[in-house]
Length: 147
Image 1: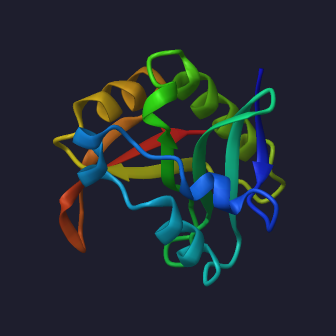
Image 2 (image 1 turned 180 degrees about the vertical axis):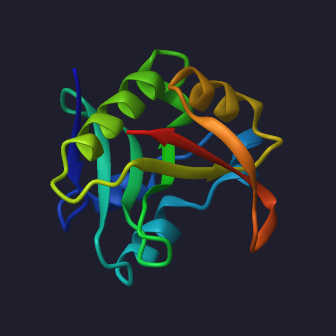
Image 3 (image 1 turned 90 degrees about the vertical axis):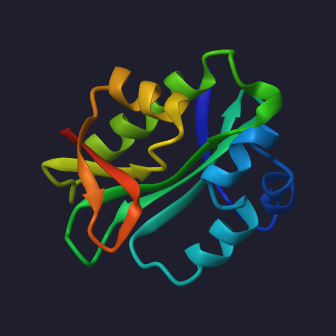
């Protein structure tokens, strides 16, 4: 059973040990970088993804002050826990968490490296629609999901 738990003083070191598969590392910032970035983001949540008591992944999401939409900034499943359905389950869980927020917006946004075909497939299966590239970075595709 997938659950989310905030990153805190008790689990942050376990979280930074989670790693994508070597061939995927170029597609996503490290969890250490993301946890540091989180310290300066208002209205965002840094969450560990658990299967029962086992941490299997990490996500960073929240209300972006630049455009007023909810964004999933980071989403990763540790390489040792991939291909077990955690990505699909966790993404659906995160979508529902955001959908139930009192300040939720009409769309949920995310971006990803267009060369990351596994991520693209996961997001498309979850209902995200690619809408183009990020205006400030031609290296990332943007996708939206109507909430």
